[in-house]
Figure 1 (cartoon, one colour):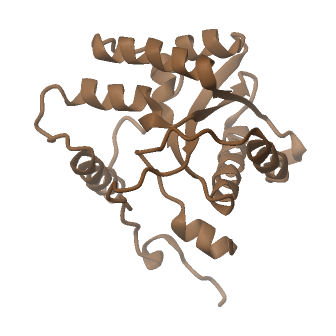
Figure 2 (figure 1 turned 135 degrees about the vertical axis):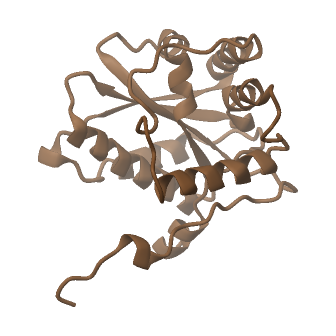
Figure 3 (figure 1 turned 120 degrees about the vertical axis):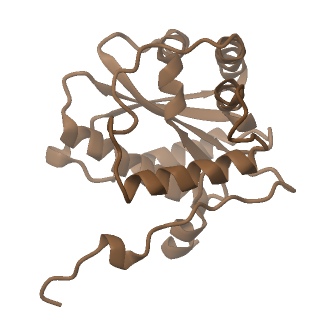
Length: 221
């Protein structure tokens, strides 16, 4: 798959088949992803790949918490700044509206948070979830490195015919995740990434993007 095609076809898929993902494919993707750039070549990411019965048990535990209305564990980092302003607020609101509609959840549904948490805790049916951690001693630069690494992973998954969905939601149940994977207290959960084959017959969702002229300035060209 051409790299442009991988970029253009990558999107957050929220409906997966339960077909298993071959371990050798995951190994190939993750080995190649180690070439992602990182400041000082620190390679600060630490990934746990969970599938099979351990993932099923993790889903059961997280889903039970979601259905019970558990607000989740105290966040270790904010998903968004405390006060978003335009154009960022407009973008996140528009994307949320698209997601809610695609998931069949009305925005004025009082039970919306619990329904969304439940769908996320099931990883949208994905047979594999990657959990990316960083050591607590790492700084902002290393979090940026982890983002570049995960983008590399997701693009290589597309080259293998797979889809993914990054899920910061898992940080809400970080204690449950850490218990299941054996991550010690010295690690911070960055996010999970659901991985699998897209389920047929589900309308694809592609959120809009700002025009390049809104985010890019050419100087000297």
